[in-house]
Amino acid sequence: MSTELVSEPGDPDRPNEDFAAVALPASGRGGAVVVLDGVTPPRGGTGCLHSVPWFTARLGGALTELTVSLPDAPLTEVLSRAITRTAEAHERTCDLSHPRTPQATVVVARWDAETVEYLVLSDSALLLRSPDGLVTAVLDDRISRLPAASLATDAIVDSTVRNKEGGFFTAAADPAVAARAVTGAVPRGRVRALAALTDGAARWVERFGEGDWEDCLRFLGKEGAQALVNRVRELERADEHERVRPRRGKTHDDASVVYVELP
Image 1 (tube, rainbow, N blue to C red):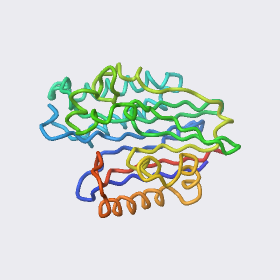
Image 2 (image 1 turned 180 degrees about the vertical axis):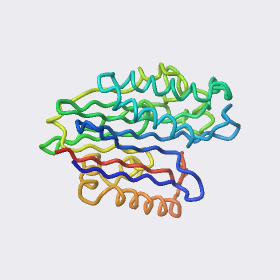
Image 3 (image 1 turned 90 degrees about the vertical axis):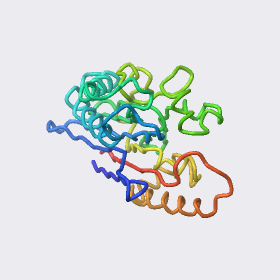
Image 4 (image 1 turned 120 degrees about the vertical axis):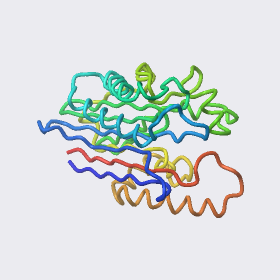
């Protein structure tokens, strides 16, 4: 088995709000990938004393530990417990009911000799490649199905569609959100490689159209995760100078990729 992990901030002068980890249990049986994309809050406060990087580190650390220490627990239960643990760490000092309380997208993949399990919440991506080269993209596409007007500004996103029925969901302080995730499992023999990408790295496909998801996973296998992030940065810089129409979102976003080839 081989693994590659790259995570870098969109702006070197700002902290990276992503979290990425690969966990290989001491038993030597299986492993796990955890990737979070912290949600940058709009101006106006979050009701929390802590930063988004603090939150993603807490939630990501708890999720990584629980994913491997509770191998028989469904990933939805694992995420629910991780959210609860993180909320308990700051519920006495922060207003966790605030709609902009720190939150994150989530991708988890866990495998053993028989099965590859997965969980995706919000707009990060998980790619699975079969031995015959077929690539399956596991996506939570609720945000892409929202009317464009709902996504005009971060403030509108927070106030009308985030973590609400008819909108989309992120991991914040409510453990019940784990039940909203896209989940599933496939036989281990049907997965030769997998990749988890935050939306800053998934721009390679979704914003800049360098290829489809199959092309993306092929690029990762041939050129590596750092090359994919480097190419996204090149495209962002070109887009910044040549843009002819406004785009929603940051010009340069935090980008994280974990690529795993299974034996």
